[in-house]
Figure 1 (cartoon, one colour):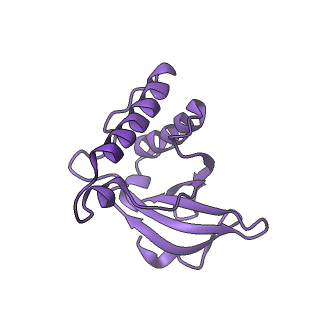
Figure 2: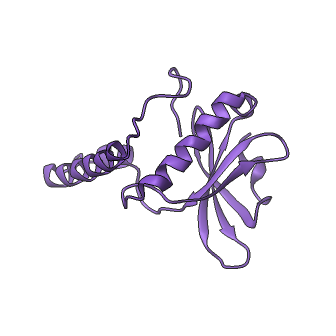
Length: 146
């Protein structure tokens, strides 16, 4: 499943473009057709979506993000399964560079910025752990998750 979802609908969201591809799935930019809210939709690759345990872990990750409710974690709007059986999560759309892109900029990431980012990551992890949630690589360890 690559860009073939572009133009289709998931719930009330129209898929605009593919914005990411990873070992576990693809991420699309979408727009709610009635209220114009932008969203990101993560769709598991079919080989993972057919695995009920994998899909359940995918959904648990989404629920955990909402349970914590920290500004360093993306907000989840909806989740479900497509007619094809592929699991999906509809979440807050965030604009900007990825951490990888920031680090790879010409000149790298200035120390002050790196420390600010590290504090934000640590704060989010602290909030997650305070809720008793421990993140572990729960998918295929040989592939990069989106």
